[in-house]
Length: 477
Image (cartoon, rainbow, N blue to C red; front, side, top):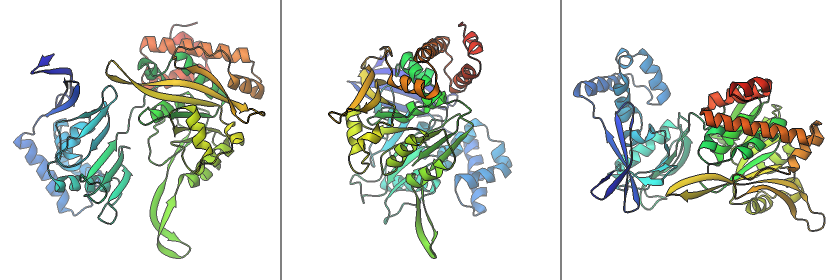
């Protein structure tokens, strides 16, 4: 639909019509338009009374404390959905960007300064400006201080930059004033996805093919070391989270992250995050105690996990990850690189400095990429390769490229299948047959629209415990 030279790309409502969204295109530029309902005077009075009662008690204004207070407040319990939204909108939540934080399609919300449109990242369109902006430096600084406090961190003139995680798992990076950002205060919020994307969702999105997923499912069933590699915003964590759904429920997973982004539906799972806090060490008070990824990795090994998953592999802890692989623990993680050659180079270079012979403990590398198709951003698997060995003559890594630039490429000769065959006593042909069954199963799930994570996970688990029943449940034999 076109109006005044603009094209309406999409319209949709959020929260039963409380928020109306229009995505517009004009001269090749996109814009995200928010229209909100306004509270009635009676609703505003009730909300003001709730906040006034809360402030009278001189309680800390953290989300946890207010949650406790709200359980005792009869006025709060009587609020309908409109009232709860407006309470969040004006007092407890994210103020003028609250509508953006309730849109499940938005992956990132960012502000570059005063009077500059707040930008949102939507997978189909990339970064899009909105009709929302902060009109004064005071209001933007106030918002940044509030968000930092909600994440349990302090931001000030002496420490004008903060990174933290919010209660819902969203990841925040913010700077105060003009001390480090010359255009003024700024922030970026990477939204946490409460409902994970399933492997079947990835097929429907065109991000990966069923043969590729069937291969990954098969090697993860038996145990393999897998790294998901890609550039910025290629969906590395989303992809890793999805394929971790293939891990059998009888296996134990320990995840290690700087900020919680992985969201597994796996019962036997320990989720750990790094932390910096004030403490007491060696008789000294007010000492900054840092629990980094290396510390968490050493702790993880004592939990006897089947899989150790590092959210983002990038530092000194990498050496220990590869040693754990050699010691019989299966490792997975994400790594920032555009292709397998760059990936290997960065592993070998400082500060990581992994010997080439140790890199061969890694089995499979999944390379993710982005491109624009018909003006929309497309994330996809560009390549799946296996690390075979080091050539004794040249010293170069021998790499088996299973699929390159073609999502429909078949998997014909797998080095990892041969390793599993020798290790676990299952024939190579049997592994290929299992992979083909899994491909048919995934295709059928996608055809039937069985893609939500919980339903997909139940079927993956059933496939392991009773393959015949699982196949019959989707009409296969």
